[in-house]
Image 1: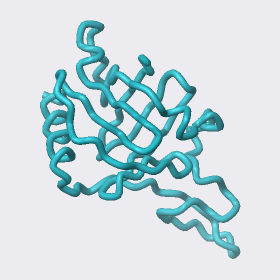
Image 2 (image 1 turned 60 degrees about the vertical axis):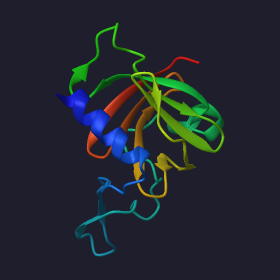
Image 3 (image 1 turned 45 degrees about the vertical axis):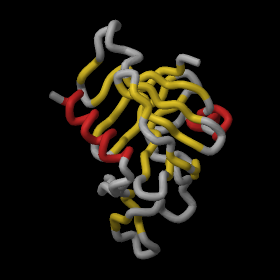
Image 4 (image 1 turned 90 degrees about the vertical axis):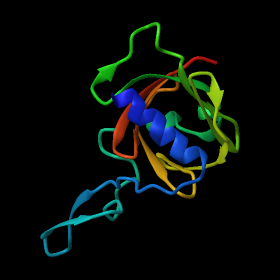
Length: 147
């Protein structure tokens, strides 16, 4: 069921339909010590989510290559299913290949731990150069570099 919704989401992205993305929420204290919640990092804090301690290696060149989706949400894909859905990064484009069909490549920029497609932003929560955990439109996806 979740795989179908992933494919529908990918199909909508392929036609350029803007979708609402979830945003990060940061808990900050102002100068008076009051707790505030905001969509931007707190003053003096990095633009990386606290749980994302391994993003020092996160650069555009580190993304370049093919990444197989190994799971999403709380579902871990069977070994035979890994590789059916792949993200392919070049220096300037991100392409999604689902069940062997290539969707239109999109231009992207990498800003901190955000992949910005212009119409949507994905948050890279964990990254170590060979695996990554990404929040995409409310779904957490797990990817493994295969090329």
